[in-house]
Amino acid sequence: MRRRKWRSARAGLRRLAERTRAWPAGRHDVLLTAAVVALSFIPGVADKGTDLAWPTSQRSFGPLAALLVLGHGLPLLMRTRAPTLCLAIVSAAFFAYQCLGYRPTAATIALYIALYSVGLYQVRRRQRTVVAWTAGYAALLGGLTALGAPESPTEGVEFFALPAGCWLVGTLARTRLREQERRQRESMEAARREEREHIARELHDVVTHHVTAIVMQADAALYVPPDNRAEIEEGLTAIGGTGRRALGDLRAMLGVLSPRHDAEPAPRAPAAGLFTDLVAQTRLAGQPVELVQDGPERMMDDMVALAAYRVVQEALTNALKHAPGRKTVVHLTWSVAGRLTVDVTTDGPGGAPARGPAGPPPAAVPSGRGLAGLRRRVLLAGGELTTRQEDGGGFVLHACFPTEADAS
Image (cartoon, rainbow, N blue to C red; front, side, top):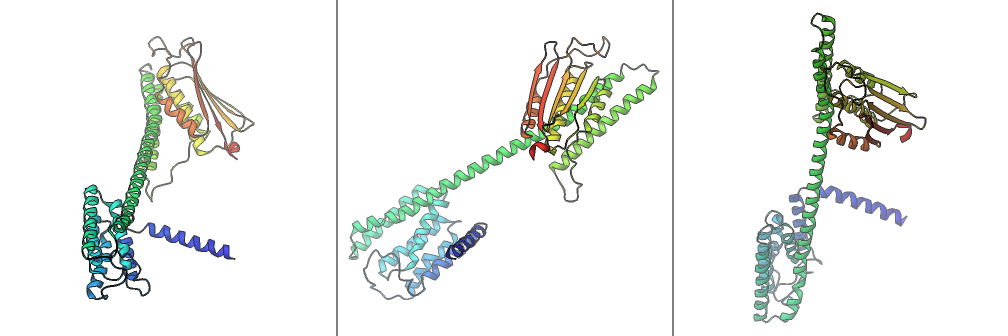
């Protein structure tokens, strides 16, 4: 039962700490100031504090003493906004209170809080503040000795370790806080870089493929005889369809980047059935492409489906750019073990080109700029991507992905 109550109390304190941590700094300062002032006037607690001069009270506690007590606590209201001024006022009240010989007061805790705040929040002239306060404290010890205080100067010097320790703890907290801020900035910058890379990959995948298809479709239209209007219209229709798909993909991507509350939900990742449309679009650009599918299609995670779609899209784009007119085979295999394997093979110069002598140049190895981002995308989806060039000059892109059955 006791253990259960202790856990409940600890959980309540943790929730309270989380709530107060989210408060603005000004509210913390108000609560801290109120607590210090209240402790300074509560009977039984108010006379517990630092006493550098007198073993017993030499003066009765009067209005001046109460004013000095308030001079200890009230400046804590500005300890985060003006820590140096806060320390100056609190120290002046503390030095005057000690020299006048009043009874100890719990308000002296404000001095330690002010020193800690200077170590934590002060930005400029930190060393000057330490030197000035140390000189003021030395003057206080000299004044108390001249007034005949029973405490020896040696004991006063030993007491100096307490305020010095408060300042040092504040300095260490400042160092830790700045380190946390530095790590947070680095983390935010890394997230921004990753987001920029993600946007660049999406733009590359969408724009490069569609623009390449449009260019190749327009080039293919140049070889159509002028009197063959049906084939010309077919080519223009293919160009228009490719452009509309490009605009649709860009609109969907921009919707993800800047979502609105009233916007339609983002489309799901391309399903396996859209591979047929992708191959058909590439054929309209004049590239002979064959689609082969082995095994029954399985459910895929959105990230896996999109990565597999981008693999085929990038491979067909590279085929259009580097091996126009060469035969390309897209082979999709769903294994019994629940994995999707994508193989895209493009013939090299040894194969018979689909176009005449005036056609584009023979196959070349892709530059790899898009493949680098593609390899990262496949890796994030839990798959593997490899590429190789065959002896005849052809190019093979191989990717293997887990399906939803694998994940379960």
